[in-house]
Structures are given as structure tokens and as C-alpha cells.
Amino acid sequence: MDTPQPDNPKNDRQSDIDAPCHKIFLRNNVIIVEYLTNIRNITTQTVELVVAPLKIKDGDGSPVRCFAIER
Image 1: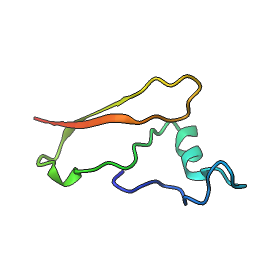
Image 2: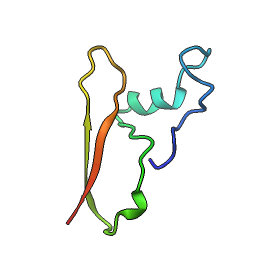
Image 3: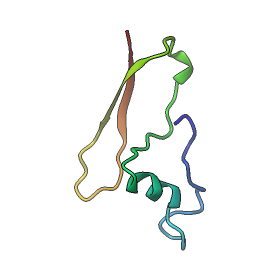
Image 4: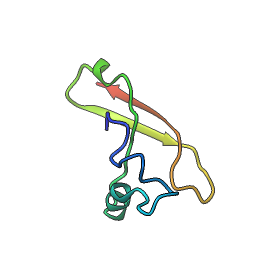
């Protein structure tokens, strides 16, 4: 997504409601890729999207190297 995140930032781990939209997506096997930049630079309708996360033990998220391959 080219938006910061699907949840209200106030709904973090310290709140009574921790990331409800994230949990709905992930419970349904939908992977969320947030804070993408330079999407306007893509010039083709179809791309191969590469999302390479760090392997973080017991992590529930990770920074990624994300890029689009245009053919």
C-alpha cells in the first residue's frame, strides 16, 4: 500500500486495541507492505514485486528491501 498503515497509529501495543486491521489481514493470510515510496516511478501496468524481509527471531514484522521489476 502507498499509505503509512491501515490502522490508526494510536492503536499500538500500549493501547487497548492493538492494530486491529493488521490482525484481520494477517488472520486471512494477507501480507501487508506499508510505507512504499516512488510508486509513481513505475511505468508498466504489471510488475514483479520483490519484498525481501529480514529474518527476525520471534518478530511480527520487519523492514524490507522492496522493489518492482518492470518487463
